[in-house]
Structure formats: C-alpha cells, structure tokens
Amino acid sequence: MTYEIIHEEKYQQFTARLEQDEEAELAYAKPEDGVLDLTHTFVPEDYRGTGLAQELINTALAYARRHNLKIIATCVAVKKHIAQHPEHQDLLH
Image (cartoon, rainbow, N blue to C red):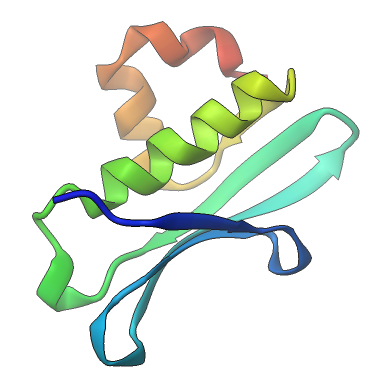
C-alpha cells in the first residue's frame, strides 16, 4: 500500500495521515547546517508490518538526497534500513 507522506518542516517531521485522525511520522532534528538527524519513527500499531515505516524512511532519504543533506541515523529503524540498503550509505554523516 502506498501512503501520502508530507514534509511538515515546521514540525520537523515527515507525516502520513491515516484513518480516524491517526498519523505515522518520522521526526528529525537539524543539529547543524546540511545535516538531518532522523530521530524517531512512529507507526500506529494497526499499520505496523505494512511497509509504512519504510515509506517514511525512503521519503526522508530522498528529501535529503534532493537537498544535498547528510543523515544521522539516531532512530533504530532508520539505522537498520540504511544497513539493509547500501545505496543510502553515502548519505551518512
């Protein structure tokens, strides 16, 4: 399933709006210019195992690549995703 994911720069997160006012999110911080620290991924229990977390992560990584940003993978899910997808290793700070 594909979800619409929006970048909410004001809240420093990538968000997927789900049914019944639920949201999934990938939060980040900006510890320095040119760097995004992907800090936390949250997916509601009913949506776990659907690939939603990977979609959030891939959206954030694509955003970083488009904007020439480096990534710090503080979030365990992001760290695991990057380890399993070596094509993203070059984004690591």
